[in-house]
Image (tube, rainbow, N blue to C red; front, side, top):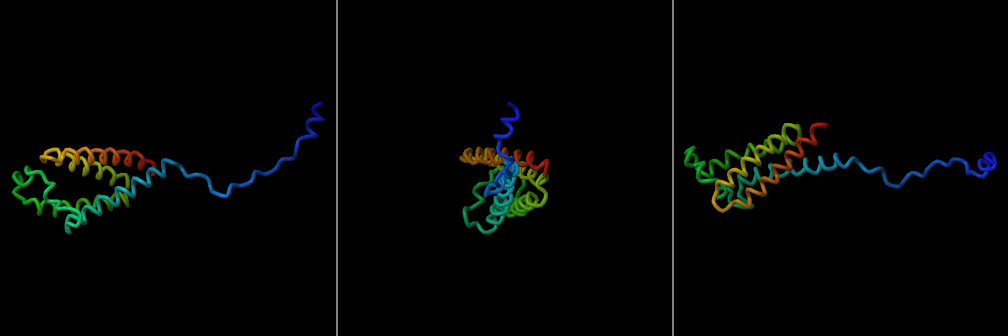
Length: 143
């Protein structure tokens, strides 16, 4: 009976290749999405601190910073802008180090918003960016 079953089997046929390539690793896709976000966001907001196209960034600085440092709000934001741009470039070139720097940046921004009256909602949004930067840091560990 074994020989009868063997004779009825069809010969081995190579599987047909799908028209689309295999799906990429979803962790790598998540890494790239977060990397693009954390490259673009700090660079764009850092550049905008010079030009004030989207908002007047001076309003978002807690009043404690000018009181403690004797630096005006506008000057403090102008000093902060190159750091934000540098963080975005670090995420692009060295994601492991840059994502940790981005996490610290967004934690600092969140703390600034907590200390500013009326900006608690922005503090929560920046805390979510902080958490996303931590996720990018973990994902970049293998890259």
